[in-house]
Length: 288
Ligand SMILES: Nc1nc2c(ncn2[C@@H]2O[C@H](COP(=O)(O)OP(=O)(O)OP(=O)(O)O)[C@@H](O)[C@H]2O)c(=O)[nH]1
Ligand SMILES: [Mg+2]
Ligand SMILES: [Zn+2]
Image 1 (tube, rainbow, N blue to C red):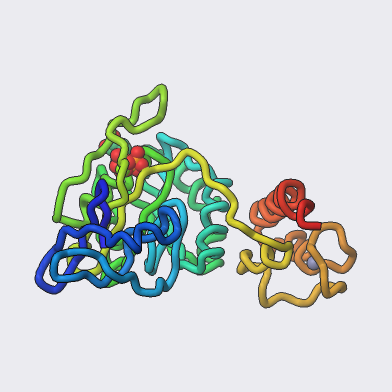
Image 2: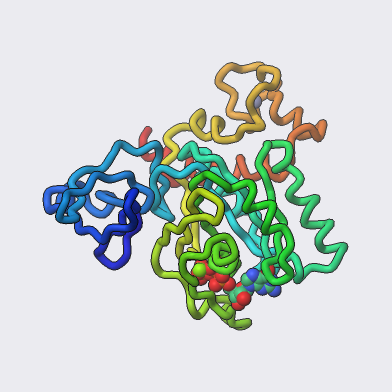
């Protein structure tokens, strides 16, 4: 199901139906009542009369029932922001959706800059997170990405101007998405995407283009233990001395030991501590 300016476009066996939402569904719970990716039931006169239970619901971009969250950045213009990438990974794990990383515009890097970037992103391999280095401009890496996404439903998300619409245009042939010229000064796309758009992927599956965003929030993590669970690299290690170790300054902490021994990425641990402190100050203290 696709949603454009108050109309809902439902992919049915006999083609796409332009539908409206039945009143009773509209009133149910604010704006999450029917979202892109929903599996819906429609009446003969093209009203959406039912929404199936969702496998998952990602917020910002708001889409349902997806297999992959494609987190896209540009190697340059705008520069990649690793903190933001970490927050998006956290969101992906929080919503239990498999993350896929896409780094576009590698044509803008020289060889040593490219090597440096690959080293910085090495931790993804250890987390079993696929990472595609792409240049839409020079047609590098697109086919590999396409093969990976085939037969799945994937939502693309990332900052404005990283080339989400540009890449999606190469993966589908249904309609041409507007692509923005990034202005050097503002680093903001002029023809920036405003709607969330579900499109068939050439060869099978669906891809969803979404508007770029300028900030990402931490998901609603309620406790330190819930936070730790969102760091897959913390799992399967020797137990810390204390059962309720928060991996901060406790003695006998195996996570800190792992960082010292270089078997756990320091940048990821630093990110963990930063998020911990932030959530503690802004949210957890309030529940006490
Ligand atoms: N050098 C280079 N430029 C690219 C590449 N891919 C896209 N661009 C340019 O990046 C700019 C932004 O592309 P868009 O596809 O509109 O970016 P977007 O992520 O969809 O942006 P929003 O819709 O605002 O979120 C355009 O000027 C593209 O031509 C690439 O591989 N290399
Ligand atoms: Mg776009
Ligand atoms: Zn510990």
